[in-house]
Amino acid sequence: MTSAPPVEPQRTRLTGVQWLICSIAAIGFAFDIYELLMMPLIARPALVELLHVDPDTDRGFTTILAWNGNIMWGSAICGGTFGLLGGYLTDRFGRRRVLTWSILLYAFSAMAAGFSTSAEMLLVLRCTTFIGVCVEFVAAVAWIAELFPDPKRREAVLGYTQAFSSVGGLLVTVAYGLCVKYHDLLPAIHGGHAAWRYTLISGVIPALPLIFIRPFLPESPVWAEKKLRGLLKRPSLGALFQPAYLRTSLVSAFLFACTYGAAFGAIQFTPQIVPGLNKNWAALPLLRKQIEKVDPASSAAAEIRQKIKTLNDDQQSVVKDVQLWQEVGGLFGRFALAWLAVRIVSRRRLLRLFQIPGLVLIPLVFLFPAAGKVPQEILSSLHTDNITLLKYGIFVAGFLTIAQMSFWGNYLPRVYPVYLRGTGEGWAANVGGRMVGTGANALTGYLLAPYFLGAVGGLTRPASLAYGAATMAFVVFFAGVIASCFLPEPLPEDIAD
Image: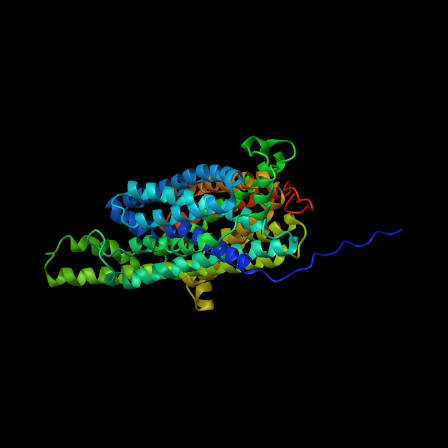
């Protein structure tokens, strides 16, 4: 006697409340990345102003790299630590409450950072911003996952709401471009009109709709029911290392670190690499020295200042364009992941679809067009230049790297029970991804770029950074491919289990 086939759950349209929650989660995911990708865009001009250094000298270049590493990794350490605590609080006190306060924290911290008067102040406020972002991701993923018991719908909703993260990348690129273009028309801050300040202040935007919508947001029904019935076990970090979850916890955290290592140790250096790809911009340090030798009130000084402004604006505009290609690639990658997640059963196979091409292609992007090393005869035959090729290459890099960030939002809710879901996600995302993975940024800036600058003759400072990024990308993608062999496949269990 054969058993009847399992009955597929009847799918209904999303309710108004579910649409509202998905919208808020999408806004939260979008502005997570909006905040994270803000620093690579504004780091150079912000640190030049706050540290009073010349980025075109060896000392100024290394000082900026050092402080950029301090801010990127320091904020990641703080965010990871409190994000892990936030995962515990999410399991202990509920998804909605933690989600709401985390968004408010990072929005208002970002706004305050726009008024920084020192690199130390910027560091502290970027730390509090990162804390909010790290906590928000964990709460939002658990919240969304528990709203949809149907596995296919859950995979699709998680995939497509996380795809809005890359919309955040597009938005911050556009916002920075608008601030560069119209900064002179905006109110002065500390006596100036620096575009980087207005870009930071724009981070308050996600808090505005949340203030009005929060009263209409329900708690996760799965968590609330278990809490009400007294069935919710007390979460603990130690439970992640019980035999049932040990392999999952260790491998997912390591792979999350590889994903973030590729993003922050390689592709997020692109805005600092681009200034080395146009020979016209090489005149900037000479013009800055020249203006020091003339009467500040003379017409010659005014003419030099105008040249400097024109070259600076042109450079920042190209940086914005290249960043835009990266974010469009990331957006396509996230949507590709969302589409594939409901069609490919094996999570290992799904992850490797992005890892293996990335292992080969991303190092090549940084070794050649990003470093300005594509042979001239190839450029001539293609009627192009290194910057244009870099745009295409960084699109591919964004596609293959950023899609993996969405992968984890789909994977992690399926491998931990309700009472451990926030804690488990917090461990992998914040300890593995933010605390360990973003350390690749400091390694590339502190160690690899200075090494290649001294070891390879004829390299410019930006080209040495490109070589360092290529090396880091290869290392973390190679390690990720190997580690994916040990990634446990989720059991076909209901999300409420």
